[in-house]
Length: 152
Image (cartoon, rainbow, N blue to C red):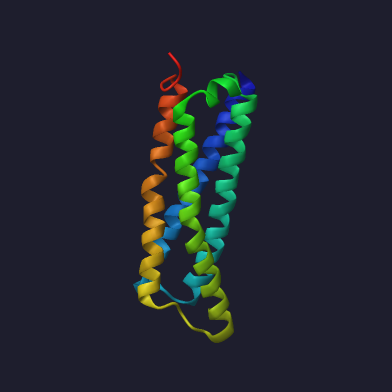
């Protein structure tokens, strides 16, 4: 029971970290706020967001294979597949902003140029889509944890 509690804690901590840094990206990625400091900060925040996403994936996998319910219980439940599918969608949506943040920082360091407002708005939309999908994952998790979606 202690192991299960610690695994759950690690997974929740990773999820909360992911949410904090995704929210930070959404708050910072605004054309009216864009300056050199924000460009640098977005790249750092996005790096931590990526590390948190990896931690969510790893701790979730550890819970599947070392948790009390066992991997066959999880893999037999369509809600786990929904969670993973939503996670993959969010991960794919996060690639363009990550590449843009990196490019913006590189351009800033090379020439002092800030990104154009229309590009910032496009990137912000992708960040906001992620921010609206992420809360659905714990919703599926709550039902999954209570036995919904399994056989029978």
